[in-house]
Image (cartoon, rainbow, N blue to C red):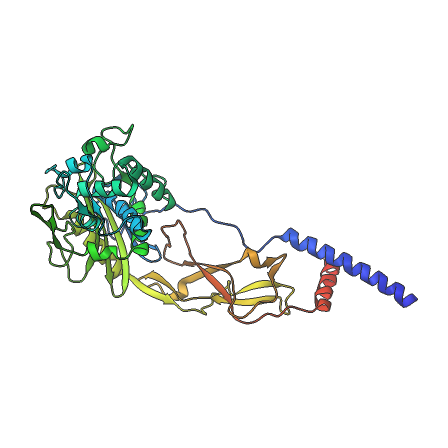
Length: 448
């Protein structure tokens, strides 16, 4: 009987200990689960390369890592760079089956009238004549045809206003909230005639930042990489029904054109020019297997033959490839100070963690992988009181490693200031038995 009473007291104490331990652990909170607000993009690389443009940006096309920035978040007129967002929505409609390449479109009156303006970049569209979606798409990208872009937008949304609303909504989906959008082609409100957006001032123009344009270009290349099949075309003829228009690509960095450069095989994307915007260019190049996107806004434009935007783009691309090394961090790599996480109810109280997958990063010349610092954050869904809930399998994703580099600023288009990658366990962690768990609770109680 005495033994039974003693057991009852021990069991009661054990229950209190478990409850207290649970309350104490809950009070500690989860391990490093706070979120970090997106940071502003500060100028990067301007002391080494001061481009003669109002704004400039260079990013890795895949990761969005920023490799150069100058006034990257300043909202500026962008002229025909607007057509990249128009083209994105056209390709989206085609992929969703709402348009087809061979579908015939009879341009509406406003689009047809704009296409006849010889002061603008255009292929002349004849009244009442039908054109394929493919032909209008090619004219929009290769020759920056303003009437063609409007006709496409009207076909996608049913009206010019409807298409502008779609452009605004899509920009917001991309996280772009500072842009001003009034036309499908980048012309001012007064230049599109009856297609003018209701209530817009006559002098209203599309305005985006260099960051905004890089985001659109990155998504365009990611979601619809076939766009490069058209943007790399140097020359093509447009059949307007009775005769043909010779279209030479305004991207003079393409092979065989005025500002091509053998070391930089540029294959896209889009130019833009207006009195208020100056000369603008969103470009992309794949060199040594690595693709980057560059943006220059507000370069000099003294005449139609001015090569400034291409010269500044060449400087920017050369700067990236000459000053950075593309480096792959191998899966399984560990980082001092961020190589373990606590475990709840495990046979072991911690688990070793490492980089789950190969991860690419651009490192400045002279910066070694030993300069990479890390912090680790556990996955909140796997966290229980004071650690990851056991059992855990080997190679299981258990959190995120935030990598920074000593001697080099890291910044990304999404606002991150560290390279955030998945962390995995390096070995299995089995769950402890009930007696070990109970003893830890009791021991923890009496050690407090």
